[in-house]
Image 1 (cartoon, rainbow, N blue to C red):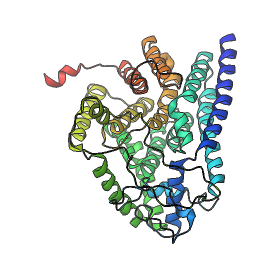
Image 2 (cartoon, one colour; image 1 turned 90 degrees about the vertical axis):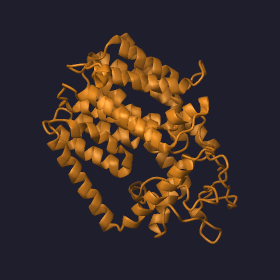
Image 3 (cartoon, helix red, strand yellow; image 1 turned 135 degrees about the vertical axis):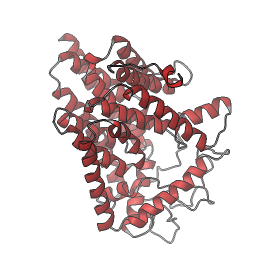
Image 4 (tube, rainbow, N blue to C red; image 1 turned 180 degrees about the horizontal axis):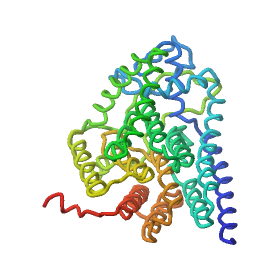
Length: 425
């Protein structure tokens, strides 16, 4: 009980310090990624292409992004799907300084809601203690700091998945609700299709497919009702342009993006400037290229991803009828995580926020995890926290230790554990 009180005080202290820290950070700059999303929503509302409209002084300053892609680009720097831009339209007419404050509050409400549903759903003191320690580390992570500072939106995914898990994990039709939620995730971020792969290999996939199809029908109806088809076509065309840029041998992390000639004050703000890509890129192709100067085409990494997913599918499903919805959720997350690691798009530190969901699930079921798994997990969390630099590439190592602990948890709970060597026998 004394440990629990200590951890409660620790969590409350870290939470208050984190809010103060992030609020001060917000005063020193502006959330550049949130600006992109809001301006994209404004383009859509006015009937402009969210992905190819380029601002000039002839247009209102509210449509100015402050910085753009290279002048040779046809596309602008709005990169999220039309679904995101559409959801943000109720916020778009508001002054940006007010939107900034609303989004700041939304980020903290989201992480607290994730914590709340897991913490109060558990009736075991050890589980509550582990969750308090987990969220204390998460609030201290560089990923959370960056996520709030630049106004990123990855918190939406762990929020949606956490709420679905907590309210429906014991439901006899849990797979149906998981299908609905993952379908919404795919609508918001098409690469989440990798999340669905393990469910499609499960023998009890019919309920999942039903939920997935219903969410797909809802998405199609939304696209038709709100005339979004052209915006989706532009999104995929713009995405091809960005893939070309990121896969180029001379990729420069956006350092040479052209600065626009902009008004000195926009919507009452003058504290904007270009943010370079974060220095920590947790992406295997880019890290290999940076360390060893290795260059390969995107097709090579797609092939590596495909081979990796095939091997893992063998590991998880060979002689195993994985029907447990929780296990399928975690395997789905792991597949999606690997797709972000290998696909030729920068995987920045704020992607780490997606890990909030599987880590909460893992600790919610800590009885199924060995001490070695928990030690690996919390070692990774320590390295991921914004304390001080201990070793080179510390944040990268921390994240991969966490991902490895998730794999160990999944593997250790398989009834049959095939050796990878059997693939080649």
